[in-house]
Amino acid sequence: MCGITELHSDLPLAIRQTVCLSEKQEQKLSKKLELGSRDWVADKRRFILAWGLPASVIIATAAMQLTPILTGGIWALTLSWMGFACLKNARQCGRMHCFFSGPYFLISGAAALAIGLQWIQIITFNALGIFLLVGTPVVCLLPEFAWGTYKQK
Image 1 (cartoon, rainbow, N blue to C red):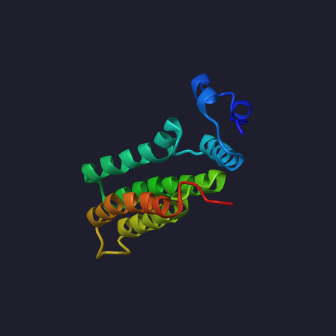
Image 2 (image 1 turned 45 degrees about the vertical axis):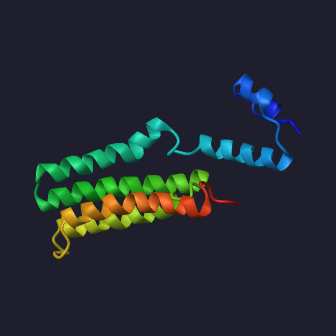
Image 3 (image 1 turned 90 degrees about the horizontal axis):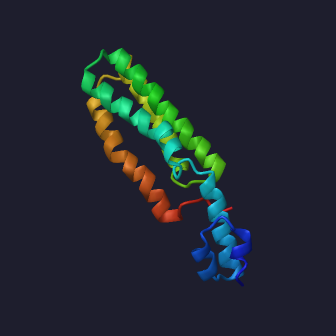
C-alpha cells in the first residue's frame, strides 16, 4: 500500500514517490510523525528554552561561587523548570525518557534547595553537579534504548 503520499503531503516529493509501506508500517510512521511534531526535545527552540538555558544557568552559577542559599535557590528553580518541562513533554507526546528525567530533575532540584539551605551537609553542590553530569545522560538514553523513543499506547 502506498497511501503515505496522501497522508503526508508535507514530505518532500522525492520521499513521497519512493516510499511504499505496508499499512501497519504506514500507521506506525504516521503516529511517530504526529508525536514528533509535539515533542519539545525534537524542536530546537523549545529544547533550548526548556533544557539548554537552565543547564547553562546551572553551569554559570557553579563557576560563580555564590552563597550556598543563592546557588541552591537558582539550581532548585532551574532543575524544577527542567523537570516540569520533561513531565509536560512526557504527557504531551509520550517521549519515553521524559517519564524518568522529569522526576529525576525535580528530586535534584529539591536536593539543591536542601543543600543551599544547609539541611543536607554531607552532599555539596560539586557532588550534585557530578551526579547531574553523569546521571542526566543515563536517565535520558537508557529508557529510550530499552523501550523506544515514544511510549506505546
